[in-house]
Image (cartoon, rainbow, N blue to C red; front, side, top):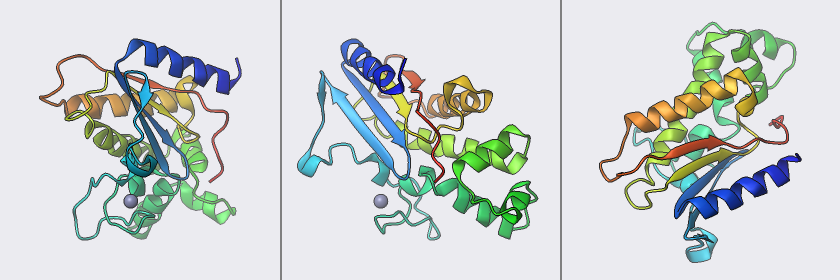
Length: 203
Ligand SMILES: [Zn+2]
């Protein structure tokens, strides 16, 4: 089944099944949609679910979001975030097979990092799992006010998606972190699913 039809079918099914559910999409940025009673929350200026700009890091040296503010979720999970984190680790002397990829002319894209993680590079796997944990922290911000019955994760950056061992490990890491941060306001079980993407982008 084509990916767009697959995604559309899932969106319809989730809207029928859950009074409140959220969709997060990771690409060059972080997109989010919140559906309540079948309607997408628009808010002022169509910014109803600007979850990429939730603050998750209040340290003085927090990463700077593309919007210019420090510590926003998007700065930790967007397409460039794993590569930027990799550079920081390598500058601190971490050994990684990413060095040889750089020497051969590759950019530190999520695809390259996923390939090295799947091949057994510890730092690359750490970067994938860090992305999962940061996304989970941002996800949990919705618990207190929206109480979604389901969270769906989509977009081009999914580290192989639900059909790959690394993609499933990434999804499990999100689940584990969400579970660890269980909100006292959440009274029912939540589902977390990953949508298939057409392809992992090169950026
Ligand atoms: Zn921001």
